[in-house]
Amino acid sequence: MNAVIPDGRPQVDTRVAIGAARTIVVKVGSSSLTTAAGGLDAARLDALVDALAARAETGSNVVLVSSGAIAAGLAPLGLRRRPRDLPTQQAAASVGQQQLAARYADSFSRHGLKVGQVLLTTDDVVRRAHYRNAQRTFARLLHFGVVPVVNENDTVATTEIRFGDNDRLAALVAHLVGADALVLLSDVDALYTGDPRLPDSTAIAEITDPAQLTGIAMDSGSELGTGGMVSKVTAAMIATGAGIPVLLADAAQATTALAGGPGPQNGLQPGPQIGTVFAPALRRTSARLFWLRHAASSSGALALDAGAVAAVTARRKSLLPAGITAVRGDFESGDVVDLLGPEGAVVARGIVGHDAAELPAIIGRHLADLPMEQRREVVHADDLVVVRHPARRGKAPA
Image (cartoon, rainbow, N blue to C red; front, top):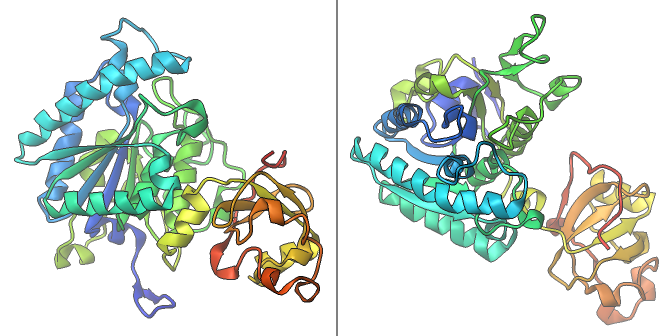
């Protein structure tokens, strides 16, 4: 019998939920679309599209996040391997993105489906207005029955402003479109207890608690792509934290991974019985707090004493001037800032209510001691989100 979650709805089995998802985001990596020489593998791409089209025909909204632009551009440019320097990567992306988009359009047309290319940069998710505009664009594409094909805009993104890999991008897109499930297709068939090439490593069927990930060895990525198992698990944690179930499976089994649909009969089916599923959190994160935690870029930092850390993280209180020990960065009221504990780790993020220039005169002081016009929170509790996985120790933004 299904349990009941806090808002009164039954808690559905993770695999059942994925099988019955009405809106599903599917991410496929470069290594699952290309030949050993680095060019696009038409047969593998068509097989993926066949699986996506079959799911769309059940009534599901399908969004595809596809890597492969840089890899697709290698062969036309006479390159044997993925370049390490950014200008050559961007040149390959410029050539490859056109080929990739055209190939997807041709393949989906076999099923009478239209595709829309969506190239995103970090600005499209870190800036709140851009984020909402992207939401409206995706909603309209899905309204028209179009399959959005999403990729990072590798041609213009710089080293400093990149998503890093399309796994994280897929998790952000899943929340942005209000997806009911995220499927990560790769060249591995599941998450393993260790290196899958070792005989004593076993596949993990389900992750229900992040604590299960402790001690699991993960790789760093395949040669043609940038996203290894670490990035996939990170993406899964982002999505499940927002209440979205995740399936990690082999792209060669895409048909099985995407079987199902939103009809009432599928809510009674067991869902895909392959790969590793990640159970969602019991509550969906609001779009605003999700954006603040995972998508927004920080403009500076505030160093807190131990008492302030406890107030904002454990008691979920607003941040007051008295608990701040230092101000770092040049920011304005309304910007996003990191909140640092005494040892320099990021413990929370928030939307600051003061300009950086006015804070040095009021930090460490109680509200009652300040002029009336300055008697307000530095970060209000409603504009603050606790970071569950603090960043590694290091310097705060200068």
